Length: 234
Image (cartoon, rainbow, N blue to C red; front, side):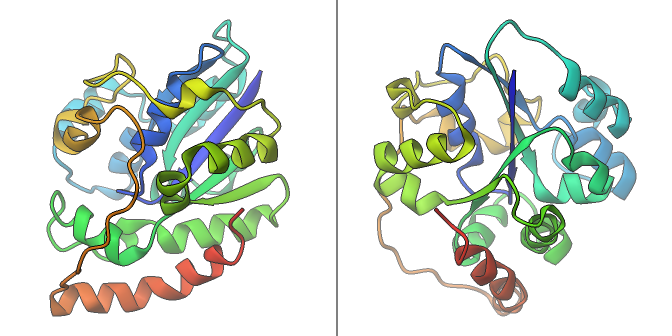
């Protein structure tokens, strides 16, 4: 089985990409399996955190052992992870997977993330963690893909992504049925409203982004990491 590990910052198109892979008949998906471990380790309080802690294993090593050994009867296992969840666990989370780093301009991510988490800080948004994880892997067998490229050229970008991680492209990845999915995490009601209304990737629509002063400070902290990862994108 090919085990693909998505390493994303929040609000980066990660759920839509999970739905894209989940629509392949040869693929099983897992939604943020380290979320409960992250909440327990950090003490963070997120919307629905009690449900997350009650429905997921909080032992990260046990979670990772399961992901490395589980057989689903399908050829591919796609695991959606947040970079800051993985960083809280440590480098042991990197072994045994093919890693895909999903990036998005942090100004877009920050404005979207703030709709759910009030006044996030650098440790909440995962971009610095993405860069550190990328460096830990020494780029070997890892891929960086940009959310805007997927939205603007889904067939071309997903074809390149599939080739880079060693799987065939499947046109089923280009759309999916609207609504919740059986593999959604318990946190879906708080985070997935927009993607539940979607049935595919839509082109980016230019818009003016207005940031408050604290958001601008956070943006300044994230841009260096984003620009480094941007150089690596397929």
